[in-house]
Image 1 (cartoon, one colour):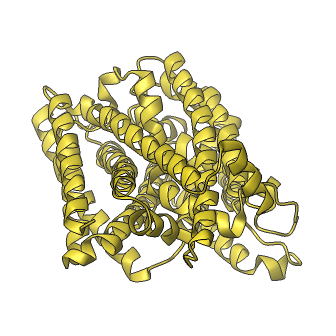
Image 2 (spheres, rainbow, N blue to C red):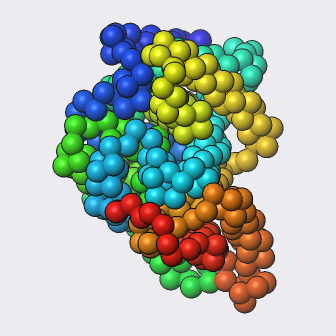
Length: 487
């Protein structure tokens, strides 16, 4: 199948998104962009969040991990599942009770502007790095398997895709994304299921036969019982739980969609439903990974990791499966990038620039600022994607989890310090110092943990360690007296 024919499906898909964006952004305003006028349907938000959470990393990277780690990634997924319940029953009620547009306004109400700005900036740094890493992975797959054959340079591919995302999120924001994410999640899950069914049939396996064959090959092994290993199951589950609290509950992108739902009850339904479906979908992606390795072995294909799924789908499977893969891949690309771009714009406008606090600004002036910030973040995304191309790391999922460990730790500590203590923080530079020092300490602990701790290596629990260090630091610079917001 020609590269130009496959690329035509990318263009058609984008035109469909643009049509949805045009329809949903009619009569939109700043509240539509930031929180969807608090009128989003919880079922649409829940379904669309699957696509946002999975992204191209799950679509490409997770199947590739099966060769080296079997179903070990499911340990982290179990942690994710537990974390969503904590988000639903601790953080969501807090956000609704305070009627927040940006969740970091909680830090302002609880501690003042220094903690507020610190939390927002850590979110911005983390989301820029995480979102562009995900974006790079999918763009690079399109580049290597399609666009190189059309002699289109990588920088141009990245530019055009970001321009597409910019165009359909420019006006509608959250109001548009709730609908486009639902559409994209549908295509992505359809692609996953069709690929599983086709490969099972090609290998002559039933569902039961697939599980038995994968088990015989050792691919279905989940729990790692090596205490010193970075993949030890308790580390992975606890780490996954706190990654969810950080990357979902304390993340403006994910919470922006949740608090766009009419009331906290529906928002909780959204979160719990989403967590159950996500558990099943991740298991299917791991099953697909096992099938891909079985297929590769049967055809003597020597490919693994992030290159496994695209190589087989585009070079060894029928044309209709290749088309489904491309549609599924770009369906995984857009939800992770469009939501991040919108959330970063919201956080920067509200938290850093404070456009809602400035009574002198009218709606038209706020809109102009918002559009300028949105465009600027698109440029930042473009630069970061080019940097990831230059680094050219083969395991993007490892980078994303590592970035989360370093950047969400201070956010986890700030929110938990506010919720579980009655102490207050000052407006001096001490908060900044603590929140910057903890990730630096964690960097050295992570790098030299085997030498320091007699063979013990740090895994996904890095975020928890970072959070605990930051919490201890905040306690040391805090005082007892002062206003305390109920949590």
